[in-house]
Length: 131
Image 1 (cartoon, helix red, strand yellow):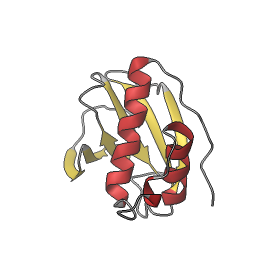
Image 2: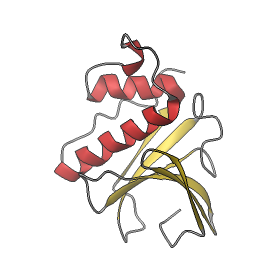
Image 3: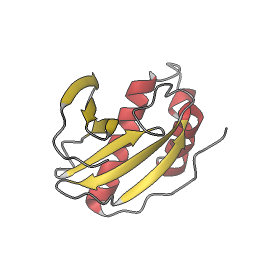
């Protein structure tokens, strides 16, 4: 799926919006400190219907380009924690205030990916995480 003019764009959480185009649905995330980049988040042929457990693909794009700069498979909440541990150094769900809301967590991971791609740092591809 590319960024060819969405037919519908609905807010989901934070920077996440649900896109519906001729080719399907996806969540689109942006980060103010990574201008010109965005992430499309899908599970199979569309936006993740069960993000707590779905294996999601986070594909990073440059505006106006159809080919992703990179794509990362992340398996639900355990995979989000695994990604964070591998790339940031801690698991947010082990913080004293408890589990992070899933949409906030997805938005945070997308923002981290965008910032890393923007500054040209490598991303530790730790795989989809535990299943």
